[in-house]
Length: 280
Ligand code: HPA
Image (tube, rainbow, N blue to C red):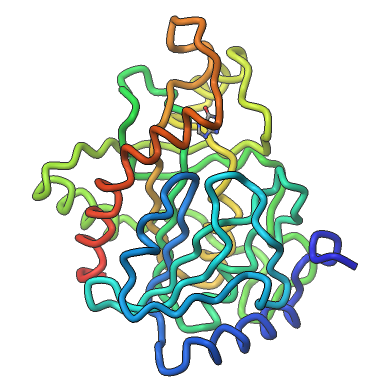
């Protein structure tokens, strides 16, 4: 049975953690950084890097989305022991929510206390001028999937609180870093849809009415699993395009455009993350 069908129960979490812990040796990562589409550069900045290919980690599928790599990278960034997930598992690839959340649960078992998630997203708030960065203040789960469905995993509770999904103190740190580094940083609500088709204009109008400022196809399963394990979460969206139907131009959305705009923001995002890390 493939990991897609199997999901990722407690046994898989333990096995994956054992393999990665062995490979990382003495390194005890405190922070995990999940890199979204076109944002892989941070992984190359890690010092004393140990790369663990996904194919060596039990329960980890090969990543399928273009622009996503397939390595975990342990090491230090700004002197902080980190593990970087370069390539994530999207529900639209057919992965179970528990597979999308497996790396997060493994990070928690490894001793990570803070989860930094990044993604590419379409801009909904009409003042957003992509490419721009958005600090995620909150999310709306419109994937209608949740990685906590099923038996309660060891170390989690049945009904975890989600009133502070993105840690207010960490967000304040991120805003301070952005200000001092003169990086324009918006802040808003991320809506997660299953994908993989981009939204229709009517769906984007609906999302605006629901209170979403940006829309994407990832991140929420990881943050739910992270909160269930007590991780503090910090999230950044690269707003790579205006969401469908809002730009006033007939231009079509493409993944190429998303990757190219993501690459334009990658440097700023890396500076933000590096600025935040020593203050965690
Ligand atoms: N919609 C959904 N996901 C996205 C978008 C979008 O417009 N841009 C980048 N990821």
